[in-house]
Length: 433
Ligand code: GTP
Image (cartoon, rainbow, N blue to C red; front, side, top):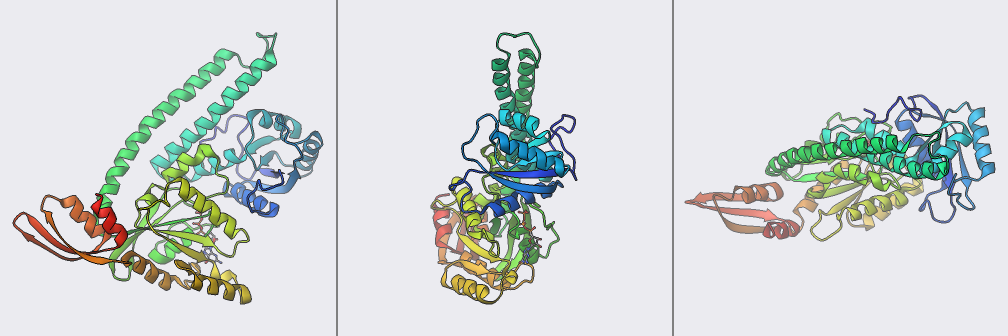
């Protein structure tokens, strides 16, 4: 599904030929990434929605022009490359103001899409659940509304003394803004409804006697492949970014447990535009209530460390590194792509570090060891607690089943006697229930 309006002239079609440009501000603006790697990522994003990148180029920005971002000579060069390559679309791997977008459209004589627009388009195509779709639509309307407001002030300034001449009138823009606002209000109401229903589902699931393990990781790290490997399920795994926008959950076997649930999530990207955070966060709610987080990394990727830092940062903003958050295990995936010394060095480092497991989701190497480690981590520092609960305390008893190993459960009158093995984390959580 696409939330973009294909009728207006900013729309584009699958298979469209595009020129990709990266404004390179120098310094540390791109984090630890090389220019080439950043171009690769942006090209991957474009390919994920079927755009054909026929040329790409980084431009050094000496001083940022508020009106057009690039310098005059650079824009001429961009127009030339676009025309030589017959590209009808210009992708700018940065956030553009509406004014910049407009002047680039005029200068390059192409349609222009910025990074936010591109990611929105991907979210729109990949959103699988009602909530995902609503969140994306909300983010898109918000993006549009921002553009309306700003281009409106721009027009006002431009019109100056000729108030009644040309351009969309103030009333039209006001009406558009009101339409967008109404639409957003309606979506927010629908979202509340959807969230309530989902909350019910989650409660029901949490009462099931299984631990939940959530996969997170950078886009294309191999989460879906590992998910399939561990659960033997055929969920979509594509060599595309964002193959999964909404969490997918499936039961699997874990040593020492009756069953466990694995939950796959949408991939992270660098510099996620702030206005998309809510849509992305909606896909991560399952992670917050997980018993364990598996952070899957593409360890063969040249930017593996920068990607890992991005993921860690998002988890931090979600409050997932505070006390009481689920413990984390790092999975170093794509081991099969490394050979010789690189491989040996990596294995040695993983062995030195706690909670790091090298695997190949593709070949299956290391996956059994990972499963054992997950089981061990869930049992870690586990102690047996003997408790007396009231028979009416179904929720807490169910919670114990879900998060611990129930060794004994007996009923006498209105009292339930249980013996349960719980990790220290879970014992603390139980006491605060
Ligand atoms: P998103 O859904 O975009 O977040 O991606 P993902 O993290 O779910 O990645 P996915 O499982 O779709 O894998 C991305 C690509 O990496 C696919 O082409 C996989 O075949 C490939 N891949 C995954 N695991 C491995 C691995 O262990 N070794 C190699 N060589 N390739 C792998």
